[in-house]
Image (cartoon, rainbow, N blue to C red; front, side):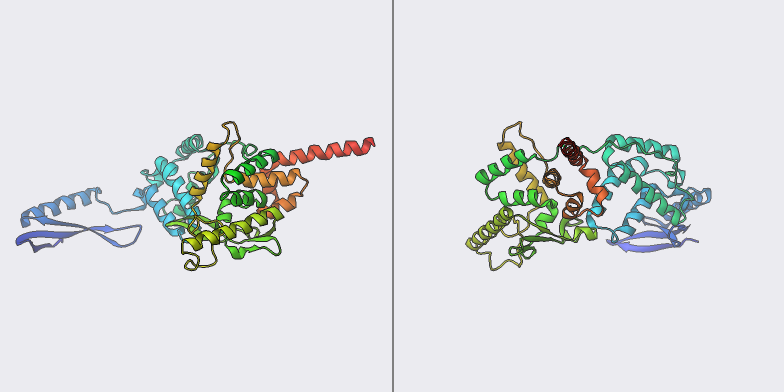
Amino acid sequence: MTKIKEYTTKGQTKYKFAFYAGIDDVTGKKKYIHKQGFKTKKEARLAVSRLELQKASGELSPLTNNNLTFEAVADQYMEAKKHSIRDSTYQYQAGWLNNHILKSFGKLKIQAIKGYQCQNAINDWFIKSPSAIDQIAALANQVFSYAIKNGYINKSPMQAVILPKKPEKKLTDNYFTKEELAYFLEYVKKNKPERYPLYRFLAFSGVRIGEALALTWDDIDFNAATVTIDKTISRGLNGPKIERPKTKAGWRKIAMDKITMQALASQQQAQNKRLFALGLLNTLPKPLPVFDNGTGRRPYITTAKKQLQAIYRKLPSDFKKITLHGFRHTHATLLIESGASIKTVQQRLGHANISMTLGVYAHATKKMETDAINRLNMYFSN
């Protein structure tokens, strides 16, 4: 029987109670409904009576597997995996969950979701985000799999869905030709010389922008003309953070050309001079980042993107505009076109397997094939 207790607040007598609602099937714990603020004991008894009627009729059943929503299970799943994946991966998945999956399933009871609803959701996600459809669908299926492991459902309604065919990646435009790169670098060197070392390095190293901005001066070996890539900047839960490469192939030491190494040496001299003038050179923690924000700190990737766009606004309107990642594509494409082996390109880019390199740079390997058959024809003709 529910006990009604008397208490005093602000000099007034009030009544409260804790009503036993049953066992929570998810947590296995007793569930109580707490009510307070009643002016009389009679009001409190009436409230208890209403709750007893609701409990008897099944309206007040504690949380069970039958009324668990997809959103509740998704929250459990994301919390469980939070510390087993990179912060950046968690951020991406949280975005897919909030922007797509929960809009389709969030308020639905997970046991009631049917296969046709999953197929409709897949088709809708594909329209809104075709390039990420595989990842979004996989995440939804992971939530259902988590529900199966925890006994919330018996099978996944995603089992029979058919994934739409993803559009082919059109990366061929996101790179500079040899002539375009030469024009761009010459313009930057003349008009924005402080930006030149970064763009020169990106184009002639092929590293990702996050890897470039994570570099410190102890990663640069001026004597051997090499750069060690062993970290990257990624999206952390509380802002940018330094992380290690995802794969073993991502840890690499790459050789650099003489002109790029000279640009880096000039960058270091200019940085030391600037920070000394600001009184910061001897106060900042060492080693300093190779590419800083002007005060010895790493810049945000978003800042680097804005700086590139600012340069494009000064160039002719018909000049090709590539992304920061496009410098990586430029490096790989020009390497392949110059005759470098696919294996060399793979190692410089830090790809885990050669099929990734072949898939992304198919446009460049087609040119290699054409050049090869032309050389064969010339050889045969002679």
